[in-house]
Amino acid sequence: MFFCYDSLVIGLGSAVGSVWLRTAGVLEAYTERWALVTGASSGIGAEFARVLAGNGMHLVLTARRGDLLEELAQELQQQHMVQTLVVVEDLSSPGAVTRILDRVAAQDITLELLVNNAGFGFVGEVTETDVELMLSMVQLNISALTELTYRVLPGLLELGHGAIINVASVVAMQPVAYMPVYSASKAFVLHFSEALWAEARDHGVTVMALCPGTTRTEFFDVAGAPGWLKKKKSQTARQVVKEALRGLERRRSYLVTGWWNYLSSLAARIATRKTVVTQTMKFFRPRSTGDQDDS
Image 1 (cartoon, rainbow, N blue to C red):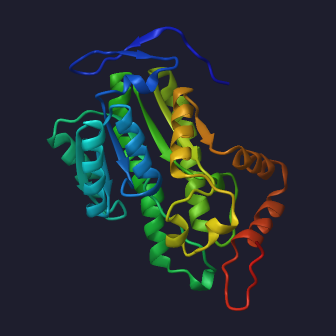
Image 2: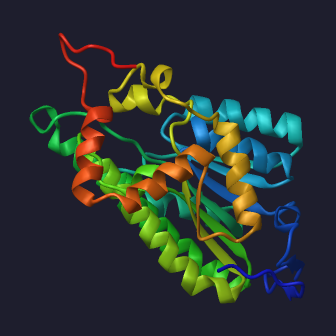
């Protein structure tokens, strides 16, 4: 159950001691504040950066592809007159979180919103799976997200306001054959975020798990499932971000974007676990020579 408060909460942050609203208008309160967006070079991460900049937020942008980050930073500066800090890092590498936050601290930036978006998936059979790639996925999807959350969240609690959006997936609701590590990693993100939401909500801080379904990004090409977007109902990254920020306004603990994705997430709770996971084999089985397109 979610409660809406009419009272105002006085922000305890250094410098301005601004008034933060517990009702609608949370995004307006982020104007001239700083957000960190991981995986910001494309897709959902880049759209988060664009929409937040449109609301007047300054952005720390991090991802592996520096050229795309620089292009995005210039776009945001020119269109929205916001400040940006580009930090090129691979969050699956040791020490990446420390290096990012050291850069932030060196610029005397106080983070008040964190969007943990960086992550990747893989579709394939066990015999075709690179173990090192799966370990890298665990490092990025789970370990880096966990470290960033635990390093940023105490500062938000001290300020008495702020938010963290951890990008999970609709597959967080169920095990998925041929994507076992990815679906398990997103289940971790969902449960981790919901638990922290409960701990942080009385301190003026929201931790929300974002659970998008099929989204029109490069995710499926990277995951080894080209053509997936042609077969499945999908949303744009902009639609996902807009829904996410509306959910943040309502201080949700988690949000599944798209009504059809929400209904499928409910169906996964009703059916037996055996039925759920065996059904995923029909949808996620990797295509091989001789396979027919069942779309």
